[in-house]
Image 1 (cartoon, rainbow, N blue to C red):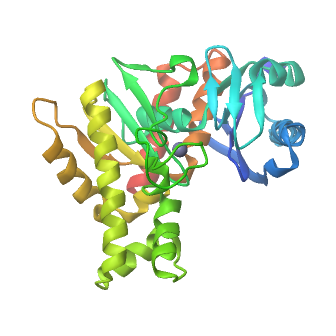
Image 2 (tube, rainbow, N blue to C red; image 1 turned 45 degrees about the vertical axis):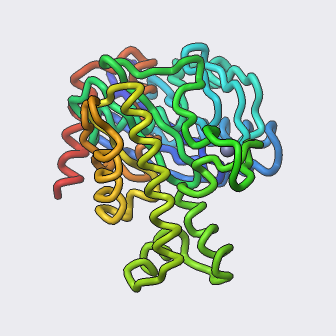
Length: 324
Ligand SMILES: [Zn+2]
């Protein structure tokens, strides 16, 4: 009977451009895949793509194993407590009861969450956030968003927590959210390259290209980079002033800049904080797979197997990989 077979979980991280999926058992990864999201084809199509990706991942569970759960993380405003995607600009979804729909389709328990909070969960349990009771995870990639763990509990707030990439100012460049001067317009990895090109007319290979030019003494590149780091410093110090987070894990594509980002960020935050607890500011270690690993944890938890031993097993696997 199937309950004697080793158990597996399928986990998906749905992004605006690709759906990344992992099939895992407690010893590691059995299968991984990535498929285009086709978000521009509309909400029905993008949801169909997600369902197909879930079914393809389930079909990839080896016959030696039995699937016991599904983990799924998506971008947007996501209320994981209700299992509902409230709104996703990327996917075109509004008030979609994703958890129940996927559970009905697969007959399996579904752990459903937000992509950045799933990434934060993975860094907290398996990566650079391990051991922290009060943690902020700041993802700086195409967009900017934060996940919080306070008092040892992830914060959801109806899906509205951590939208730090938008709002906060009333002037500056227009933003896709309808606001102006949002941090995403000048401090995201995507915005850094875009701003440099707009100011100079010179195409550049994203934030990495701008950083390379700062090392060559390009004054415009230095200005664009410094404004982005200052903007992120404001965000981090605001998050710490409000939450008291003792550790800030910085993830997303921009963290590849390493100390060129983190050193000035630490210095900026140190200058802005006074009576507050000065946080450790550390780079994420799970890279582009953080969201998928967060989904893995959500899937095991939904299956009733999200115990400390499972988490510890994966943490060991990641430590071995990160340190090897
Ligand atoms: Zn905005």
